[in-house]
Image (cartoon, rainbow, N blue to C red; front, side):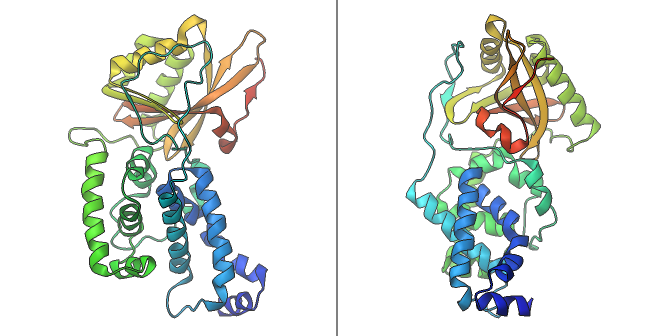
Length: 335
């Protein structure tokens, strides 16, 4: 390590890459939590590594570990992006031939994107400080990331660094060039705000473990119901407070009746789909492909399920442009 640092300080790009590459993926997850966008997270990681390379001559391991130093740069780059208001704009309804029912409400976080589970494998063993309060699965879930997006930028940074990653208050103060007192104050406010944003957990069953027989059972039932356009079977899978969101479209549908009305419109005029399983944000997900008269099945989006016990509590539909992130094609050949 000492030799690599000396070589990198002397301008050896390969030594710098060897030093920083082990942290690239966890930095991307960190930036994703802050920004809610995979594309913005990747751009910010690139900016972080460029800034670190340009400043590496002044880096000293005695002041902070390399990991902490990189997190400091990444966090501040994210804060700059959040303060600049660099966000994707909302889009209009983009499902041809389908007239949607009236939305229950319009959502704010239209820039949200799904994070492929395949990219989480490299960070499963990333070290967490002793003060971390969240499990990895919870802190990458769509509900958690969405809730973070409406907090003030500084509160987002403090909450992630303290409660998700477990950095000490003094370390976070150093990263943000703030006092420990201000960090603790921001954390208190962030925790209170987050409790208001996250769906209430009282009386709600937790989701089944990823890959468990319980999860497989509900996923199998969902695929069968969706591919056969069986609304009754789908209704049996939904919680009473089921919820659908559709970023970058702002339309949201809250409550089982509203969700079923939306799905009925998607199945209208004989539209039928095939689903290809994948995973996003630690949750079951599916590439959705519309069957056509020529036999080719065209990718129309990605659905991510949020489970509660043996029911579906939420569905989030993303546009088809995200399919390649999951190794899914834009279309499937005829069967």
